[in-house]
Image (cartoon, rainbow, N blue to C red; front, side):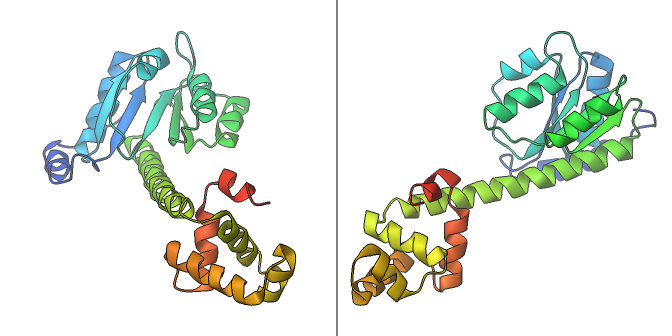
Length: 228
């Protein structure tokens, strides 16, 4: 950090007013303790909780709550690097947004990080506002991803209540098939298609065909592929 930190009082007051489960949490991984402390204090000054780790191993071995937030990672550290951690999390299906910090950054590293989904790639010393802007973007992205994941889970639970025939009808409705086309493809009557379609809309809690299609689009890809 290269400018004086603002008072922590207002940030602490904002943080204390939020539900602890929804208060943003930033995970900082940097082998320099001064950098970790500086970032933690900066986050707290704007009402964001932060926890520091000296290495990627320490982070992976920690048990922390599933709260909205992002990671702030140093690129070069003893042991696994920040880029290594990014790849590990992606392989594990953890899409937590990442802001990279480095004192040794170069174009190939930044391109690799950004292509892999990083929020930003900042060079030390970084301006406080630049880091706060990147972290804010990361938190907003995580909140959006969490909302999408929750919706997908809700739709998956509803989808699980459908019969196999109802799933077949849903998939064809989502592809824009007419009732008579669905009836022909499945070898059933149009009346039967209408009955299945009505049942699907009720179980999926969709009031219109448009809502039903959006519900289908929200389903995890593996469930949609079952019917293709």
